[in-house]
Image 1: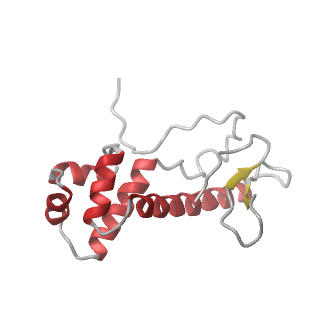
Image 2: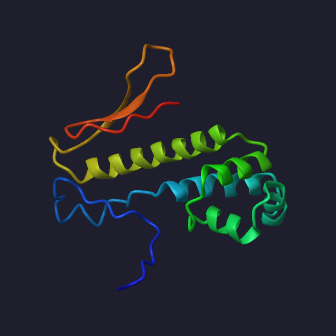
Length: 150
């Protein structure tokens, strides 16, 4: 048994990807990486240390460090405490992580479309709500998608 060096999810497509396209596509990000990235970016933007934020959140400094680096899957209570220590709500942290996920998905889609045929499996993100409202966003395509709401 080997230890995984990467911190990326192994995503098994329902339809096999062409051999040439597989290595070129970026890997699917993990939610814990995205949330950790948001926490670290906000902490650094505030010019605060791990120790300061960990003490304010009442969590251990090593644990907060692991959460920021995407090594630990934090509970909602821990994420809410870290967010509050940074002056954010849990919703703020999750929304920022969601925005990052959407931008990475768009980049994956662009990479996929560059290496695919004209009829290739491109998926678009479209709003299903009325114009001007905060609608549900979902990837569309032959395999459906996950419903995201803001």
